[in-house]
Length: 454
Image 1: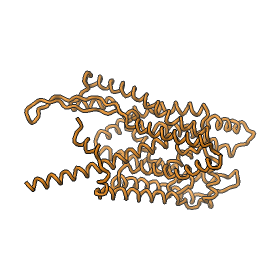
Image 2: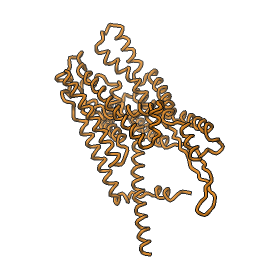
Image 3: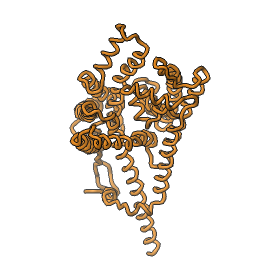
């Protein structure tokens, strides 16, 4: 039988939204913060010529810069103050998570509760600052030599002063985004960092839609391709929404306890295991590793002799690792599957979960507590991870193939769709939680009023 909370959640009335003053304030604050983020993406770094930079950027499309540019909302293409976006923080967070699963000291911190998580978050921020400084310096050096072979200079006055100023601005821009994300999490509707990434991706949708329908109007893109692409996107969104909510729920039994009436009653609960435990990390890692050699070869090829052996190797590498090529698609699928299992093993520890169940007196019916429970959890998790890996591979490979065959820009790739759908679903859940809390508040007030009248 559904609980009282389930009944209220299923009958949420959006008409109560007008009465939820606090929720409205949180939504308006979130919108304002995202507007500030978009304004900052158009503020260029000091000493950079935006016109020449845009022309040079068009010559190196297809590499890892496109991936980072998508997540930063076009900030990298414009070389703005927030060109690095929140990717250094995401990278640092992943590294700290992996280290906490492998290093004994960090693993002990993870088990300390709120205090341990606070220290790990502090280490994550330190790592983000370090990565920002390193990436900012190499980005400034790369800008100075960017386009030297073609006679174009993106930096007005290259030198150490430009590098120092660029590093300071890029580090400050990323740290400001982290602060803005924390404000959205605490004073907005939650998921601050995720909303910033999603806002950057969605911000490119008008340009993408305009180019798509303009291509259909001029005849550059066949109407059947446009319709097929729209149908594919809708099907993928529905599939992602279903699979990201899919769980394998394991029944957990607790010992019988005495109730207020003196009767013995056994408590039951469920341990939810997500089909896609790894989230969007596998496609990000796989695409980054594949696009990194392509990006290096593109930059190196600009300074290489066209008749040399190195130039021949660079051209061959670019051809085989291009989007839609069999080698690229195969390596991309293998990378996604590998990182699915690897990252799932990092974020979920069956032995730790089994120990926690044993300490609390819980057990899986038919499975002995301890090592047997850990082995069973690992067995179940491995089986559902196979399904999750196949799902992620299909979601990411099918759009890549369609993009390669039709020439549509890499905006609605599998990774972008995963991020947008996941964050949208989480945001809707947050809004429903606030509305549910508001309805519970109304019920409590009515109960108090009736009690006083009696």
